Image 1 (tube, helix red, strand yellow):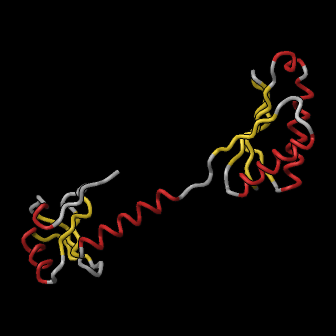
Image 2 (image 1 turned 90 degrees about the vertical axis):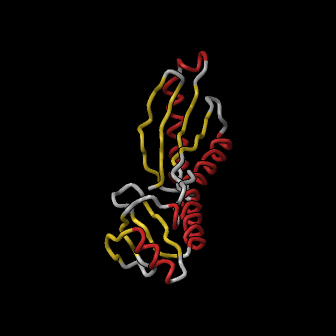
Image 3 (image 1 turned 60 degrees about the vertical axis):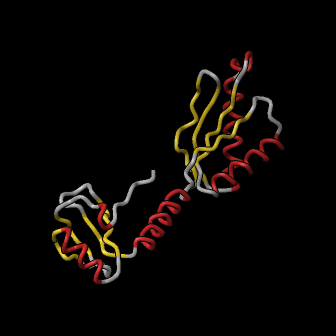
Length: 169
C-alpha cells in the first residue's frame, strides 16, 4: 500500500496545480515557479496526486507531510467492527451451555459484530428438525433477554442444519 511521493526535483510535470502551506489554491503555475516559491519559504514542493493533469502539488514540510500520511494510514487500518462472528450450537446442548453461548454472542454484538448462529445436525438428528429449530429459537429468546437483537437473515434450514445471522438493534 506504500505510494511513492515525489518531492522537489523528482516531479516531472511542466505545470502543476499549486496549493500553498496554508491550504490556499494558487492555480496552475510552471514547475520552476512552484519550486522557486517553495525554496523562498524554505519548504518542499510535494506532489500530492498525479492522477489529474496537471498534477496537484503542495508547498510544505516533507517530513510533516509523511508523518500525517502514516498517521492517516494507521487510523484506516484500526477501524474494525462489523465482522461476522460464529456461534455453533449442538443438537444436545444443555441449558447452561446455551446460556454460556448466549453470553458469548452478546459480547460479540456489543463490540458491533454480526453473529452467525449455526446448529449442526448429524446423522439421525436430521430427522428431528423441529427439535433443532426449537433449540435455536430458545437460544435467540435467551439472547434477546440479554440484549435486543435484529434478524439479518431469517432462521433457515440448510443441508447441514439451521443457520441465521443476527445483529444488535
